[in-house]
Image (cartoon, rainbow, N blue to C red):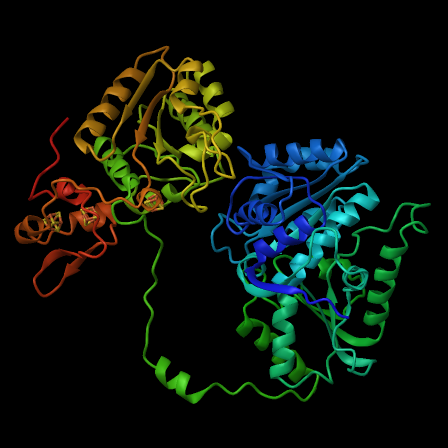
Length: 608
Ligand code: SF4
Ligand code: SF4
Ligand code: SF4
């Protein structure tokens, strides 16, 4: 009798969580970052449902997550850590040391890439890092496969005593698919064997040798499959799907015969390549597989300009590339015919670009406005979080990596000071990023008496990645109570002599406090001044601010100068061209009153 398997529709990150839980995961640690943030909640959920005993935690940064998981794996546990692609850079130093250590337990590092990028400062390909340093790396093509691969990766790590990487991309992590649920440790043997063999030719009915073969991995493979079907190339162009990325360099002498699985994978891939006149490699985000295929002029890919060298490989791009190359090689492909109805409906429609904005009523907007009002000509080193969007208010000049706002402020101070100039430096950072990466930079600045103002925008949560708790909340990943660590205690502990805590909605007070801070740091011997602008994220609290803002007065008294629109960039405000006045969208406006204070007509900001 075949036992019925339950399936559940879930996003890729939950599927990864499910695979790890079923494989016997015992400890998980992560720092949130899109597109990886849902894996820890998934692990907590499946652990609860299976009544398991997994310890899952949010770490203060990716390095801590990696080291906690590595510690557990060293002690014999099956562990995993999760991060986004740029988070892997933070965990890079211990990863390099750990990759050669023999584990008693197991360690899967899940690193989620962001082709595009859609919510990162840069694109980056985790597979590149893994192959460069000879760390086994798996690249699933769909949520369901991500679950299987997560299961297999943890077992693989345990059997081989080595850390492995599971690379996902945002389309795999956030797509939804029906995923079978097995009890932990009870996956059928055939399924595990299937995962082992999943790097292979996918359309096996396609005759070989062929004029063109495609090698693809990850979400690119799923897109290639759809395109091949749409262009009717299934019997003409074989596709080789790569799940476990081949090693970058040949195994060391003596190792070759031991790693039979790797040898078989490489042999199959070599056979596939040898059977094709030409090879097209489609992969995100970098040229990892392509660079590994050393066969002269046979390969089409990024390196010779057949594929765009940056950005996400969308369906349209992949279809154009395959269609063009099939045409060049005189392989008969069905030409893509656009749907006339869709084409007609799109005619003449121009979609205006919509850069991201802070939410209507976000307290960061008030902080940035106050900073600009206090010192419009200041240098504004910024950081990474919702508040990076202060760029549109002219109050964020830099965005390098997490923590760089403080360290760059130190550098700016020395640069300005060396040139004998006096320019205010107003750095900004959020509460979660402060804990993540600002402690050594701030302590260093105090010790060296760097004179800048640091505004810590404390909204009580890690807002940008989905409201994960910060150490200050004292809440752990599964919602239980832990110990609170307050930002002001750290600042005081570092010996910062100027510390003020204020409500950013009180803009005149914030402006005068910034000026007070500037007066403090202008004295020789004083170090940085810190202002904590504390007001909870509106989306987190889901509360509207019930201030005294009167929308009607603002709209009536408006003289159409557009100052508020330029300075605040609030999505609830728009300009009514007919009336030549500002109007406020009642549905979006939270009543924070920032525009009322910013308006030169209704209520000019008091001179501090
Ligand atoms: S999510 Fe919260 S912190 Fe982020 S922009 Fe919106 S209100 Fe501001
Ligand atoms: S600043 Fe005041 S007067 Fe100027 S556009 Fe805005 S609401 Fe109107
Ligand atoms: S329109 Fe004015 S009061 Fe309303 S959310 Fe925007 S800044 Fe706040």
